[in-house]
Length: 628
Image (cartoon, rainbow, N blue to C red):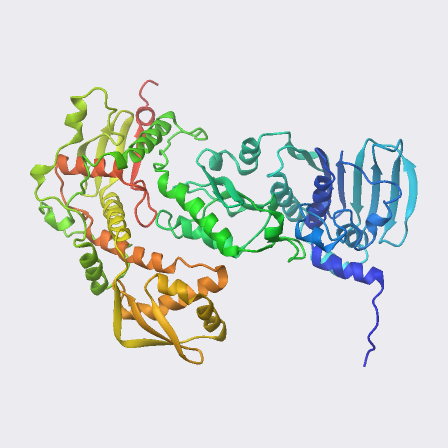
C-alpha cells in the first residue's frame, strides 16, 4: 500500500492548473482580470497560435513592486484579501492567489512591471516556476505578462488542445465577456499582426452595441428594476427577433460574468406566452448586489456563484424581464426586401410609438372595449372545410368547461354585428386623432389573412393568431380578478416522493397551499393531495405537484401553476378564435384590428408567432421597380 505523503509544490500547482487552466482562454481570462483589478484603463493583448504559443497582456495599471514580484508567483499569495471577513465582501475578480502560480507552473513566463514610485521596471523570468531571475528593465507604469510554451511540461494536456482557430475563438469569447461591462477600458487584441478587437473608451450602451451587434441592439428592450438593495438593468431581445445566438447571452453579478440555472430558468419563464418555444433569445443583464449577499468562491473558475437569498434574486430577474416583454408592444419586424436592413425603418419606429401610446391610455378609456365574437357566431359563407390550427394545445373538454364556468363565458362577445362601429368613421370626423396604427381593412385573403391599408403601406394580419391573443388576454384578465376556488377531492390523490422531494415539500408546503393545492404527508415519502383548485382536474395533479416541487428544489420558486392555467386558457382561446376560411365583413375585420391595437402583446399569438407584418410603400415600389 502506498504511504500518505505531502505533494511537492510543483505538483500541487500543476493539479491546480488542471482545474483552472484547462485551455489558453483560461490564461487570457486570469491575466485580463488581474489587469482590471490593478486599475488598468488601457490593455493590449497579443496572441499567437490561438494562445498556445504566446499570450501577452500589457496594461497601465498600478504595477507590482520589486519586493513583491516574486510573491506574485507563490500559491495563496494575494493583495486582494488578508482575513476571512474580506472574502465575504470581495469585489475584485481575483482573490485566491492561485492563478499566476498555476499558470507559471505549466509554462515559460516573463513578468515586467513598474510602479509609479519606481524609476525602473523589474523583469522576472520563470520556467515552470523552477527558475526565477530578476532583471532591471524599462517600461511605463503598469505590467506586462508573457506566457509561452503553454503545457510544455504536461504533454497530456497539450493533446486536448483544438486547432489554433478554435482556441482563438475561445479566447475571443472570454475577452468579449470581460470587456462588455467595462466600457471605461480601452482594449486592443491582436492575433499575430492581425487586429481582432479594437475597443476604445465607450459608454455602456455603445460597448453593448459593439459586442452584441446592431441586429440585437436595434431591437432590444431595456430593463431596469430595483428591489431592496438589489438593482437589475440591461437589455433583452425582442420576442420576434429570429436571428439569435446563444453567444449573446450575458449575465453579470457585480460585473462578473456568471452562469446560473436559476437565472436562466427565470429568464426563460419570462419569455413564455410571447416567444416560440423552439426559438432562443438574447440578453445582456447586469445585477448589482451587496458583495456580502453573494458568494463568488464556489467554482474553480468563478463562473458560478451562490446567492444568500436566491429566491429574491430569481424573482427580481423574472419580473424585470417579464415586465418589459409583456408591456412593450413591439410590433413584428418589418419585412425588408432590401439588402441593407441594418437600420430600423422610421415607419416601424412610428408604429411602435403609436402602439405604446395606445397601451398607455388603455386603462383611461373603455370606449371601444370589445372583442370579436367567437368563431361560432360568424356566418359560414364558404363551403370549404374549416381549418383547425395544429398548434392548439391538447386540453380536455372538462378542463375547458371549468374555465368557462369560472369566467362565465369563453370570451367576450357582442350581441350582433350591428353594434360594430368602425373607428375609421370617428377618426375621419376628428382630425385631432392619429390614424389607426393598423389602418383600415380593405380585403380578406384566402379566408386566412386580413389585408389592411395604413399610412405607411400594407399590413397583413393573421386573423386567427390575432383573435387568439385578444381572447387569451381577456381570459387571463378575468381569471386574475377572481380568488382561487378550492375543490375537496372525494378520493385524495397519493404520490410517492423521493427523499429530496419530501424535504422540499416539508420546507415549502405553504407555496403549494398558496396556489390552492392542499396536501400532507401520510407516511414516509407518501404525499396525499386532498384539495386542488377548481380549474384543474385530478389527472393533472401528480404531474403538476411534482413539477412544482422540482422547480422549488432547483430554483426555490415555481411558475408551474401559472403556466398550467395559462396553457388551458391558451387552448380555449385557440378553439374560440375565428377559424380560417371564415369570410368576415370589413366591419368585423376592422374590429379585430382595433382590438389588436389595444391588446397587450398583440403582436404575437399565444405560441410566439407574429400576428401581423408591415410592408412599407417603399418596399412595394421597389418590388415593382417603380421610380427606377
